[in-house]
Amino acid sequence: MPDFLLYAVAAGLIVAVVAGPLGTLVVWQRLAYFGDTLAHSALLGTALGLLLSINPWWTVLGVALLVGGLLALLQNRPQLSADSLLGIISHGSLALGLVAISLSSIRVDLNSYLFGDLLAVTRDDLALIAAVGATIVALLIRYWDPLLAVTVHAELAAVEGLPVARLRLLQLMLLALLVAVAMKVVGVLLVTALLIIPANIARPWARSPEYMAVLAAIFGGVAVLIGIAGSMWLDTPTGASVVLSAACAFILSLSLRRVVPA
Image (cartoon, rainbow, N blue to C red; front, side, top):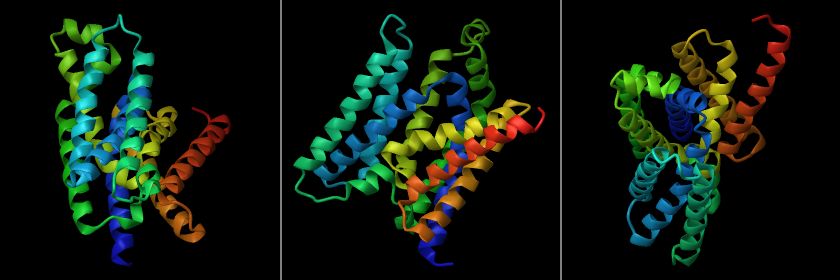
């Protein structure tokens, strides 16, 4: 197997394994729009990196963490219209990023940022993705039970003494980290799809939260493998092919649930 293909498969599988359990929490808490907002902010981070002539990954991470903190703050202000504010932050940061890139003297291929460039992953990219992925998984394992408690019933978790606000902040920070590395795999516009589609495929088949997280990671990994194979065969964008394979798997799952008893 050529090195570039090996790196692409490894990077895609790492992101899928991380996105599985994190996407499970996102689906349960209905935080898909938060994921979209973080993903769109990544393009602004990319533009800042290009303008400042530094590695865009660091500016993407910085902007995503900053926006994640802002979203956590908004979660604690129920008097604000959350959906409107999320829409403003999401599309405002995406538009600002596009304008900033257009003003940059550096010519860039926007498609690679919007839809990913998985087959262009290098050894250094893979090492970074693996390190960030391991960090996210370690934190999820450490805080899974408290995060699950907040997901099931935030008010009850607060009564039991759990730091609900800090746990929500942690979850959004983990989402920001995932967005920063997944941008290379599926791009800014499709990151959220990799979070929510495998989790929704797994949801009706799972008997427990942990089982759902594992199934979501498996379905995400399968979508990555099929997407890469389809991309090479049909010469289509790899990130879009991965998400399309996940979407087809979701439709197939819905059809199977109609004929397979629960």
